[in-house]
Amino acid sequence: MNLLIILSFIMIIISNMFMFISFIISKKSFLDREKCSPFECGFDPKSLARIPFSLHFFLITVIFLIFDVEIALIFPMIPTFFSINFISWFKINFFFIMILLIGLYHEWNQNMLNWTN
Image (tube, rainbow, N blue to C red; front, side, top):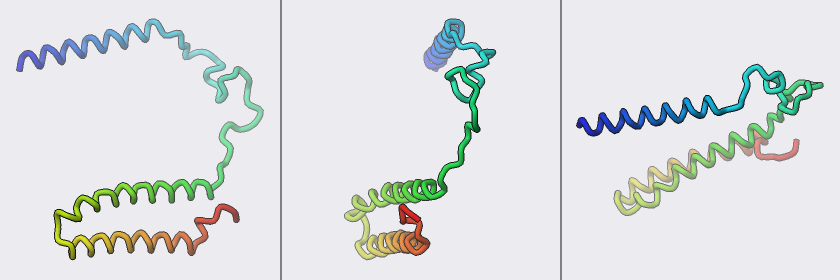
């Protein structure tokens, strides 16, 4: 137990030393006017740095993330096929796939899957 405490203390000291050395060596200045501007090229921006983005592309991204998570949830269904009863496996997976298909139908009905308006 004492060895574990000593080793963790040594690791904390070494990591703090490296952080302190990197802080001393770094050339970054917080008072640099160009670094405080939205663009790091040294010029003042002529327009707003935050331009509005397309809400349609945002919705497509959210739909993609939802389907990506659903695929991650579908993968464990394959190994569980042999470990549980077929009827209960079929009911659970059928219910899950039906929820996904109803969501896909709703998105299709709302024209969220169209790339052009």
